[in-house]
Amino acid sequence: MTVTRLLFAALAVLGSILPMRYFLAWFGENGFTIMGMVDAWHTNAATSGLVWDLTIAAVALTLWVLIEVVRDRKWWGLLAIPATFCIGVSCGLPLYLALRPAPVSYRGRPG
Image (cartoon, rainbow, N blue to C red):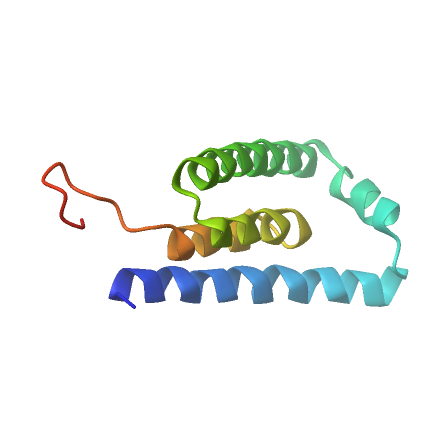
């Protein structure tokens, strides 16, 4: 595994641990209610803006993953989609970057 892939994998781990810490704390205080969490995300204009920003980024990432997975037939990349929507873009994006095939140069050599 290359250094770049290791860095992306480490970011995916951090991108799952850090947000999940806050999600679990919120659920501990408020009970496991998804709609309650969605309501909390829209408590003011700043948080609503952040939710829309991340939602659009998640949809764009999902389209990117689907297009590349169908084209390259590298099915492992699909793991980034549930990671994105169950944890967040902070996990899904670096996970996909760690899993995606290495780019091929114009001369047919990796990278």
